[in-house]
Length: 304
Length: 275
Image (cartoon, rainbow over all chains, first blue to last red; front, side, top):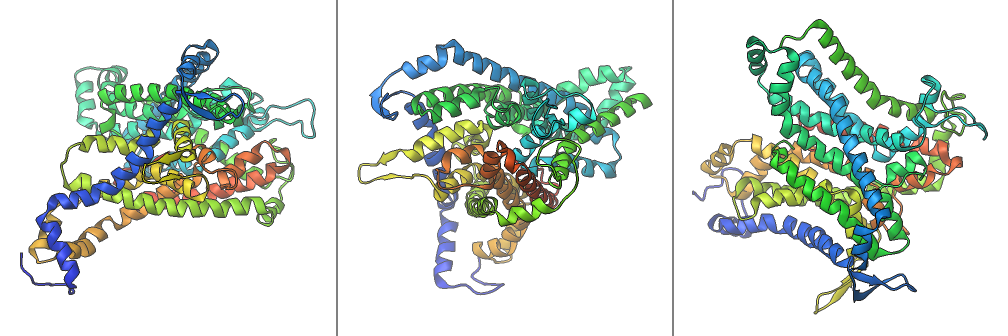
């Protein structure tokens, strides 16, 4: 390499640094990698490790602080007490239902946007689907409280919210409300990967299927869905994972009546019983990591 | 695929229904922020600008807004630095553990917020003894910044790496062939290439931090309140319904145009969203 400096000059120390990195490429890699890896491992991974450890400490019943005495009691409570396992089962059911609902709503939307809408309209439509993601998580949970409000017999204002007034029916503040609000919140995360997957699907493939005599439904079942599996898996990571740990939405849209896994962890932590809360946290940690590994097998990580 | 006219209309209808589903709740809250009544009933009893005027005079929401902005700005800067470094390392080198790194970067947003929240709360509250010295991170502005930066890194990373993948390595070689030093290549070629991706990633990271509540609740400590925390605390207070409506609408008015801008800036890069 020449020593000419075509654009601007260079001070001596800077030139020294340049030369150093040119000679030792690995040094450059280390300089790039160290800060982010250090941050994520020291702060995040270490915290997850400490969390597992924290579940093993006995709680001092008087001070409500964890002692240094080790015990498996918290783990046993968290994993065998039927009252708690029940909450976990309910949460998994909610997360799975939300995922299926998101899929059912997202499939036709993504298909229309990518294959039927006019090319000039596509970009606008997909942006329209994504924008609500940024409206604020809490704002959207709160919006559903306004939507679902049932009419009441007493109080200053007896009128219901939007659904009750416009459609004359509202599911009220219950389980349906939680599922509805969570589906609403995470729907864009399902539409986006499916849209991207459909976009990569060559139209000639669909034509070929039609030419071979397949009707649209058959093409959908035998060509489109199998090719969309990685995209659907990618979308489901968000819908499932985000629904599983949520405690704010159940609190807001049911006024605290329905408790899911997140609520259980939150209230245990505030009790305060930090070791038991840590033990409960192992539930979502295990479920999600298992789920992630399964979805990775389906090729989800290439479609994220 | 030859779809019948009817099938096309059904799909079109489903799409517009889906969009209506996405936008109706947002419009309802925005309209209710002008409601004269102090409840969430529909339709509004009358329209007024009083709540919008009042929201800026009360201390709670504006203090919380300033706190949120400060945390989001600092966390975004840290996330951009870390995410960009990781993106360059991933793009230019092959090394041991390269595929685990992408897993490591996604983990803080792929795991449910409550897991991250409890994990960080636990380690921030502990006194960590390193033998030579011991320290405790504790809670407040700094702990929030650390927590937010951790899950924002992936957003910055996604945007920068998408841009790097799209731009040709030949550009760097050409720059070197023309005699530029590494730092000149960075200043004149690489940086201008990723500039708009950085801006887009920065906006998205900012929005992610500004909006976060679960991790925030557990890592803020008692003396520090962000805007989402203020909204959450006031949702259940019937007297403050109008102010919550105003702040909720305000959040939408600020973040949706920002997200739209980020979208334009990262055009074609794919969307580096986080939660």
